Length: 317
Image (cartoon, rainbow, N blue to C red; front, side, top):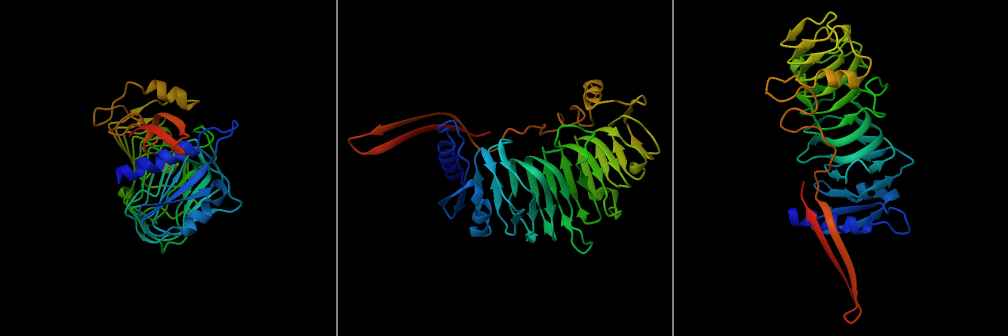
């Protein structure tokens, strides 16, 4: 599997080399060892052509769509980092149990929404404006994992973009992630505080009532919205009516910006002995892609054999 991934990423690297000062964005659909290439504007076409278990590799560049990008199959979309840009909403309408990461290493210039019940949804090393749970209470989002993401475009904790929690979430974990706002649009809060856990996150503030637990987090504003939440080994800007606080450091003078909070809390350690916030834990925040990266390449033409020789040195992150 690693050899196949390296080959696909190598192909995308070559395709993405600057030609006439323009970056060529391509989609490589991997199915049973066979690779089919699509242009950037054909992302939805590539998704529609895939089947459960396939992987789509996207290199750096912008993948434009006039409509929402709809993922109705159990597939993986793997980008090359934050310079892989999908310029519309992503709607996840697949159902059932997922067995691999669905979104990895890309920027989504809109929101990610989930339409139906799904288990084991994993989103890793992505930047996006917001995350929306299923609208109906009949659908459940079980074992959601959001890992090393930035849900906060533009980069400001005081942002109108948000992460939505609701009673549809069960056993969700959000770790080493920057979050502008936590909201509850439906006023339908999770049943148990353990249904949603934030670990080593930098959180801006929240609106409306929410119920969750925060562990080793930096929290800019834990106001009345968080009265039923639990804060463990956190750095809090204030303590309003929060009832459940354990071993937290509180600065009641507050912070005007996220940078003030991060500087003040830089020496604070969580319960695992690592820094509080996104730089702590076993997987500190980074958007450097997990997929292999190219260190060097060379191209030369063998005119006698009429062959193009490509030498690429790849390293895995």
